Image 1: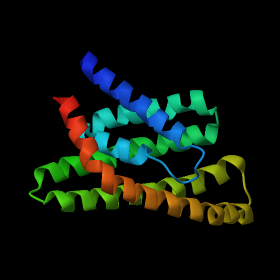
Image 2 (image 1 turned 90 degrees about the vertical axis):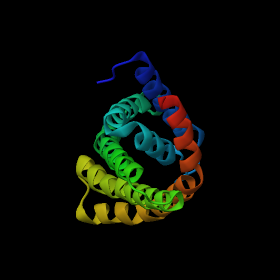
Image 3 (image 1 turned 120 degrees about the vertical axis):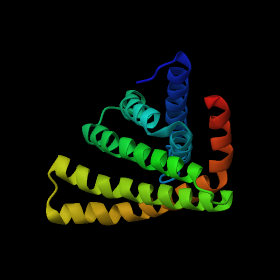
Image 4 (image 1 turned 45 degrees about the vertical axis):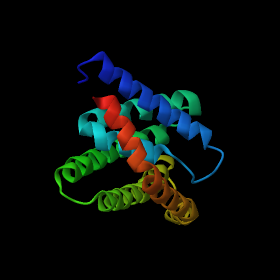
Length: 175
């Protein structure tokens, strides 16, 4: 698990930053900074710390935003997988001789794809949890597409613009 108080503090502060970022933009549907913050964290700190932060975030965010079982299921399924994807992306790209701009481009693509997967996973979990009919499930899916599009565009823009500075900050903290 986490071996030092510094590791615990960094994970705790990152989880607090994720919750604060989600709260700050919660009124604007589809606009978020959780993806870029969490992707950058996992890129620098790796899969293990990323999964720990993911589970903590998935559980603690419900204290503030309310307890919704399908959301807990969604977050506990998605964010650890996202941590694995971002952490492995970081592990591979750090070893590659790829130019920094290309690395950011790869990270933008991975983050955007993961963001789309979040909505797709929600489109499976929520209808199953509530027992929607096939027609209701289809309507739920169709209604999610505009928000998914906004989230994917937002993730691509924020990762494109903020990934490099955030990874530099996390790298300094990691030392």
